[in-house]
Image 1 (cartoon, helix red, strand yellow):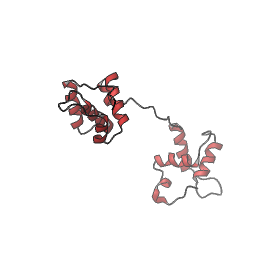
Image 2 (cartoon, helix red, strand yellow):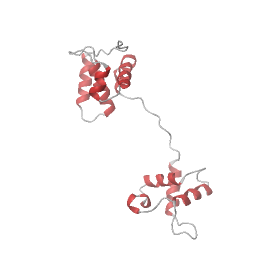
Image 3 (cartoon, one colour):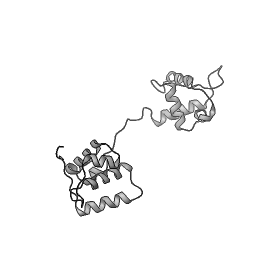
Image 4 (tube, helix red, strand yellow):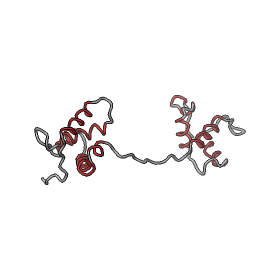
Length: 161
């Protein structure tokens, strides 16, 4: 077994803060898990630090997570180790205005000769009207579903095609 590269040595103040954090009710699960990892990895712990394998087994997490939390504590400090950096995520494909236009189209009268809008018909019409460059029928469905549009609920019995 190789030696630990990043040794966690918590001060008494840091240990108290992590214990308080781990006992508090409303805290993100990831933050709670990171706090517990640091408490178990602490070299100043009365029983000594645990191995990464032991910590990952006890907390049902992966060993790379334990290593990453240790490393962030040593290199960036306590706050960086217990909280994640903001994640950018994928930006929304359609603006609020475009989503409103999709909903407005769904609420309007269907094309002549049709009883109602299908998702595919709406997708084609949105492209024809140049509201969007391209859109699939599934995306139309997902946009309407987020607005609680009646025809997108499971109980409506309306097919997608």
